[in-house]
Length: 359
Image: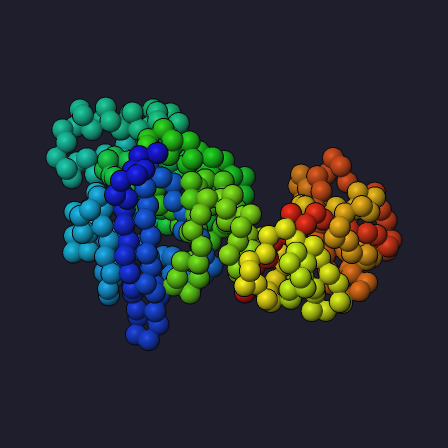
């Protein structure tokens, strides 16, 4: 990846933005590498949209610096920055054809018509749109086609960074899944730096080189998808990743914790020396159920209360007898657990699959 070992491509230092008494972005530091696909994720109100509006030049920070290749961008107007934004609304010109939409930035830049057409055709091919789309009205195109047209227009600016403001949020599930993969392919093909914001952690996991998780204006954790998933820094990140088993525990020795309710103990492999009280996180897919759980160090007995079909997976809910806790277990549909609802079952997991977080 470009930018390794040198000055980060995009540097953000101490970025702050307030609205009256509300601090939307609160002192963020962040380095993004050239050619990286970096995704900012967070719930509504976390500050991610305010953050990206400052990066693209639509809003000015109250304090802090935005540096691109060592050059300060704070006072550079949005139309003078080597960046481009793809909005959730796409912001295509409805009265223009597909070709006219794609060529618009080149026309503004004074590119001659024959060269504009040549480059528009190249972008259509690159984004897997038929050349016959060139003369169509954008309102005649499907939702997926309009997404690609908006991206083609953004690439026509030849920006150094493309910013994306939840461009897939309004699409149906199947189209969104298709475009997630296409965006990742386009990122690889173009070599551009992508900075993407979304409220969907699943979307970020599919596409990103690294992910930054925001909460209340601050960056809570930055890491690869694997690091975020396997090493969450706190309960918020662990639960933001999806449904997990989370039990409040206290330290009970060097490699053991004790639940605050039910008086159960669980073995762990990794525990910080200063850990005293926090949460044990166990992901549903690592939990075994039935005979497969009998010989595991961490075991719980409960009642098989319900099951839920989740496409290729099936999720089971077990209500613990000792602590009245609802445990979630997931298995592939082609290897389901054969127990009957209401049956007493054992569930279990390995100590190395226990994750301890503070808050």
